[in-house]
Amino acid sequence: MSYAVATEREGYRRVVFSGLTVSEGDLREQTRRILEDLEEALDILGGGMNHVVESRWYVLDEVLSRESQTALHEVRAEFFERPHYPASTMIGVSSLLGDGLLEIELVAEIPDDEWEVEAIEREDVEDD
Image (cartoon, rainbow, N blue to C red; front, side, top):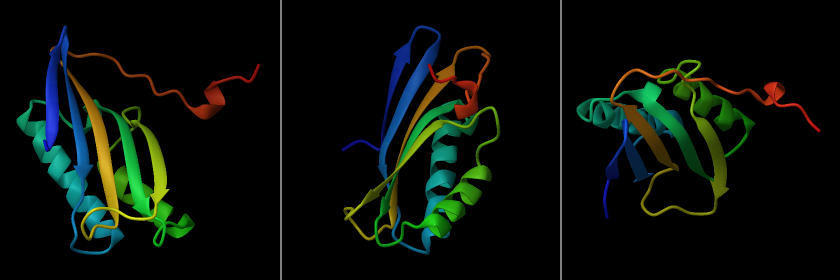
């Protein structure tokens, strides 16, 4: 099993991190630790959290609530700034391997040069 897979593309490097979890601490502490580890790994690869374009958060059903979602968003805000918020999905699950309360997957695209990012908000999309 790989911690991450990096592939070279024309103009950028695509990095996929999968199955990231830790077992110590409460939900906030685990989230912060995972994101700190990801931030360090991206730095080693020449990127940063502003290069993350997609995230999936698998959270144990037993801890998933409006309060825990708020806590996760607050910790996430320590690592991501607009317009560099990745497209994200949070999924409640009945179990995870290990003792973690959540598991995070991220996809990052690290450009060879600078590039522009545009965040599209839900209200920006008109219904037909």
